[in-house]
Length: 199
Image 1: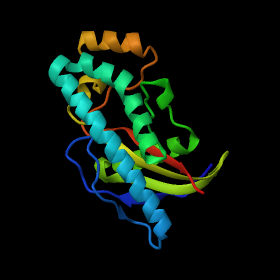
Image 2: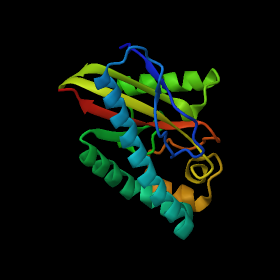
Image 3: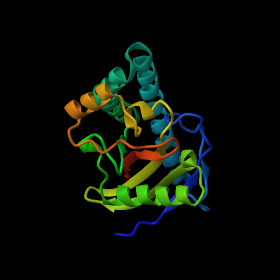
Image 4: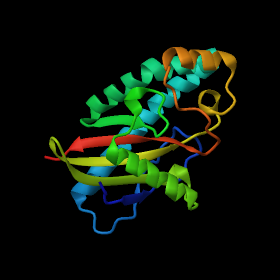
């Protein structure tokens, strides 16, 4: 399947889990409805990212990487469900090297993730990489948005190449099929995904 790539340019961010305050579209002639959908998607990603970052920072300060792993294991899905319900859409995270089996990308998400990798390899800042489109799904027309998640220093405590033995043990316990390690600073760790049925 080949999907139309509608790239978005987003302002750079300092941390991997901070998200743009506004979107600069690289697609000419977007309709007001498409603009509104993209604004809602960006808002959902911001809400998810802000809530998750707050929980992770608190966990790292109180209990280090092991506490942060627990937050990702239990709180991240709950935050995603809450933001999705509050904003009337679906927000999730996916990765080519997923930790949680539920975070494996489907076909179109994989294509977008690969395009993010290619764009980053061509010199684009991973923190600015985003994409959106509208496509047919099994349930009808669907708006789709993805925003890359670059790895920052905090991420590397649980996703880097040199993990502490206790971190490895906890990951093996919670995620026996974990693929989400070996990242370096600035690598694309995955992406946020927002989908919404188009009425």
